[in-house]
Image (tube, rainbow, N blue to C red; front, side, top):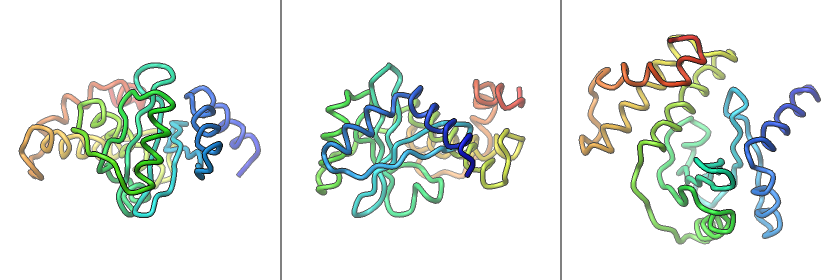
Length: 182
């Protein structure tokens, strides 16, 4: 890794509000690593006994989305299995991470915002796996597939294999426009 790339990652983490996360978790003795999920979208990642916990800045400044990824789900680019905080404060995020690492937490409902973030992550991971820094049609398709799968779960259709019913809606997303697909 070049020092310019590492510096760009560090600057992106700072802009995305992850410096206080790193400091707060390390102050509690919790190991944390900042990862670039693609396109300089940064996530603080904490290992737990049965998976990983991803933390990113939420919809408002200094509010955090904290999601647990069971087993190898994080490494495989899959959806998190449990939301620990949604727009939680720094102290709520730390408490949720501590609770999950200690084996106690509660599951929260899947939301449209979480689905959107998971779809963007799926597209970014697909592009990164192919060695691209910009999305192409297949990356968009990966994001739409994940979005469709999760909206099926949210809407009570379980693991339905429906094709494309939400792909058009996802195509108009800001990420698709930035990726040059719109």
